[in-house]
Image (cartoon, rainbow, N blue to C red):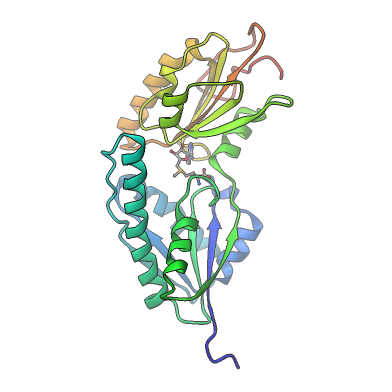
Length: 279
Ligand SMILES: C[S@@+](CC[C@H](N)C(=O)[O-])C[C@H]1O[C@@H](n2cnc3c(N)ncnc32)[C@H](O)[C@@H]1O
C-alpha cells in the first residue's frame, strides 16, 4: 500500500447558469468527490453558490462534505491597467492562502476534493492560476484534474443562434476595460466583465451587438441588433435588471460587417431575434 497517497483536486466547469449545461463528465466528476470547497460572499455570490448547492444535491454521492470559506476581499478601486493587475495579483495570493489551508487541513491524503467553477475554468477564471501558485509554494502536494464546462460565451452564441466568427475571420475575447482602451479592429469581439456599459463607447453604423444577461437562467435577457439602434434599450434593461437583482452578469459579441448592413433585425428583447445578414 502507498504510505503517502496524493490528494486529488477536481476543477469542474459547471456551465454559466443553466443546470442542464452540466456535462456528463462533470456529473461523473461530482460523483467522485469526497469534499467540495465553496468560496463565496455577497448577493451575487450567494445566488451562484445556490446553483452549486443544487447541483451537489442532485449529483454528489454521499457521504460527502461541503467546506465553505470566505472569499478574500478584492480592491476594485484600482482602475489603471497596472493598478488593476497588481490588485488582482494581491487578491490571487490571498485566495491562494485560503486554498492552501483548505487542501492541507480539509482534504486527507488519498481523498478527492472538488471546486465547482462557473462556466469553463479556462475562461476568465482564477482557480487554475491560484492552484498553480499553491503548488509552487510546495507546502502541500496534490494532483489537479480539469473538467471543461460550457462557457457563458458558448451559451450566448447558442441563444442568439450565431457563430462567434465570420468566415475566415478572427474572434477576440476581451475584458470590457480593454475594449475601452483598444476599440474595435477587424476581429469580432466578445466582451466580458463589463462593469459599465462599454458598448456605448464603440462607434460604427456597421457594428452589431448580440447581448445577453443572466444567460441560461430564468432571468435571461437577450437583445440583438444594430448597435446604434439598440444600445439605449440595452442600457435601460441593464440598469433595471441590475437594480432588481443587485448584480448583473452580461456578455456580448460585437460584430463588424464590411459591407452595408441591411434589414432583418428587429432588436427584440424577448428572444434571439434581430439577426444580422448571414455571414
Ligand atoms: C469571472 S468571468 C467567468 C467566466 C466563466 N468562466 C465562463 O466560462 O463563462 C465572469 C463574466 O462571465 C460572463 N458571464 C458569466 N456567466 C454569465 C451569464 N450567465 N450570462 C452572461 N454573462 C455571463 C460575464 O461577462 C461576467 O462578467
